[in-house]
Length: 75
Length: 322
Image 1 (cartoon, each protein chain N blue to C red):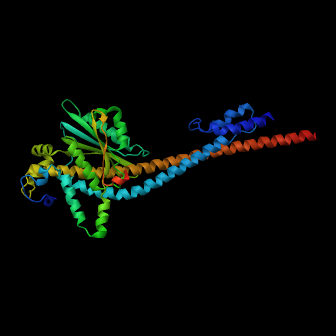
Image 2 (image 1 turned 135 degrees about the horizontal axis):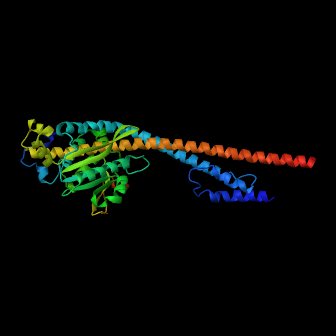
Image 3 (image 1 turned 90 degrees about the vertical axis):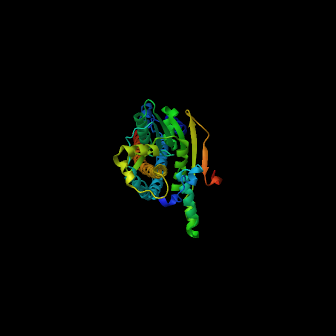
């Protein structure tokens, strides 16, 4: 985990870009997944699908939900 | 002759009557109500229709139970494996549910679908208790709600405190990427000093423990570390690279949140399937009991009708002979 943070800049470049550790590590994990050989690669990529709908509430009133999804054709 | 007309009437009207909810659960009074009219044979149509519908409901609940059982098996191993993700964090940072901070965020985890016993109301109840416990003057407690069911329950009286609402989580099988993206969204959209995640921990198919996990913000962790206790040991770790302790703590807190949330979502999904399984099991058993009672009533009425008819035929014949 500590090694993933990598180079010892004062403020890590990804933090300066406004990312959290989670999104940074997700991008790294996706890189590793893409390095797999074929049968395992597509398997790993199909396994990690993102889908949820999120809506912010403002003073007791729900705003319009946004859908985060990797598979837009289903909607 | 008149009686025969009556009987036909009864038959004809029976299908019209049945769709109405007749005396909710008790089924036996129907034939007895008609008996004082002097109708010779009572229409059995109503009972027969009810038997049919109860049988269909039983089929559905049985099927739902099977589906829940197979889903449970798939998700249970994943939930058990995911426990290894948060345990190191608890060893390192400890879990401090009693910490007193200004901005509390309660993450209530529930299911999107119903028919799964009381797990959703349990987590809502715990969340409300936590809300009451943590709120006070100069303190703010907000909800982040996962799942339709908790949303529906919290909308009733805590509308103002809901900050974020997340649904449709279980469309694809749950995975870490999804939950971490979700955790990222939560971290970006909510200001917090402490995140309290409320979920049902899966213990066995019939027992779920409502649980809260607390994730502190890096500043609070630092403050607590200075105060000593378990977090005071943090200084004895050597930090690699050029990062400061604050940065490390921030990274750790973020990663801890996504890991704890991942485990919580899985545990809750597991509990949901378990609860659905036992709920469906008991409802198909209830349907079976009801069917038995109805069959008994049906047979008894039919028997009575046959007996009366026989008696009438015999007495008519003997009157002719006499």
